[in-house]
Image 1 (cartoon, one colour):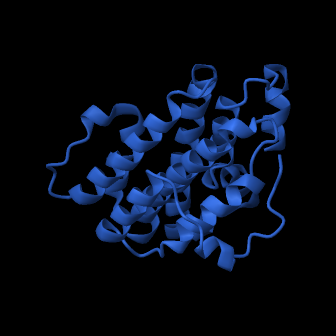
Image 2 (cartoon, helix red, strand yellow):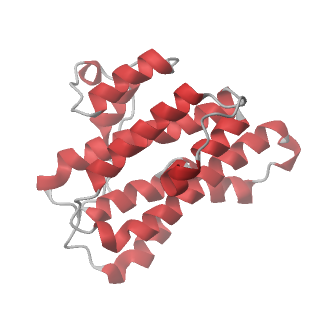
Length: 208
């Protein structure tokens, strides 16, 4: 895995033009949620080429960058609900969107319906962008499993904030790679890497 040697925000990040639909979603984020400067999405998008698996062909590089940026927005939205807004009801409802979107109930008084609708749009954009990946079917079930672990890691972090006495290095080291989206990012790379040898998957995941 290539990693960024310098993750410090730069002026070049601020000059980055986001592709559609990332640009459109960033505008919606400003209108509906706010709280994070647009520069965040530009910075993330700028650094993904230095933070990706080397097996992916360059022909798919721009698509992979956009998909990782959209997925990051999706997870940040859920993380904000759980850890910043302390809105557990909306967080738990939003967690259903990737798996059981038809069960999401926007009419419950305790839910933030506007955020849920936006989270659904972000997820739909991610789905549309990933469905034509050459190895989508090969790695989709792994991605779904890894994303569940990411959502569990957000939940763990939220509970940990309320019960700091439970903190221990073993659990923190276990949850951190999931909380930072390390596995789903790699899964996206693999969906666009037809030349990757599946026999190396276990080794790759141990490195991640």
